[in-house]
Length: 326
Image (cartoon, rainbow, N blue to C red; front, top):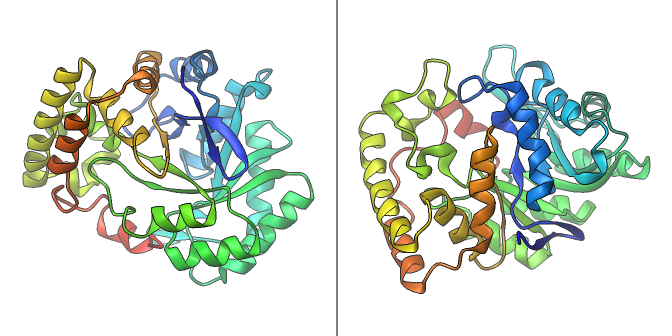
């Protein structure tokens, strides 16, 4: 059984499904298999799915999710995001002015083929707009019945507190995994203090922690080639961590991916990992992680192996790191 967890007042599956890789980002997935994977998720007890208007060209990810949900909308708790944009010079940016928030939501509703979004996220915080104004526009959307719950992604502690003061945030979404633990000192505690759920995206290190991805073999169109952790000596050092992870997983008679998810599921306060993929076989493997209960010695060994500061390289290239609100 997958089990259930709370994101604020929202009840969701303990493991969520991240939709980003259903459209081209880490190579080019088969759209039919991608849709079949989404259709399989509720059968396994995974009903929370997360997309964004920034995934895929011109909202392609939302459009694919919309096709998958047609005639099945009631099976899913649907989250999407706005505000993660490309600037005219091609660099990553953020947009959070109230008029844009309303416009973005209308476009997402159309692409998703639904009349309401269960959880609507600020994808990136726009530091040129007071967060109170951005959240105020989201409250208008809720009043109009277009969204049910509000969330915020990649935000600093003070921004989270300010946003939550305007309207309760159901969830904070930030990268969190064995090799990305910088949310532990401040972001996780403030979410817990305020009663906000936590969604851990990229819980498998964009596939690297599964032990099935070799940095040197990534295709030319794979976005991971531009990420420091997948490059040169960083990748070589990080592979040593994964080698230890593989040994620990073998001792627990599970896959490295399952052990990564089980480690997150064992964290306190509770988090909901968003495990993304584009194939049913990986979805089914990940779902079984909810049944695992790793030994205390294994959990301790993981904490030691992946202690903060051990992973080599930033999680994004410099321009993207500069746009995070942490």
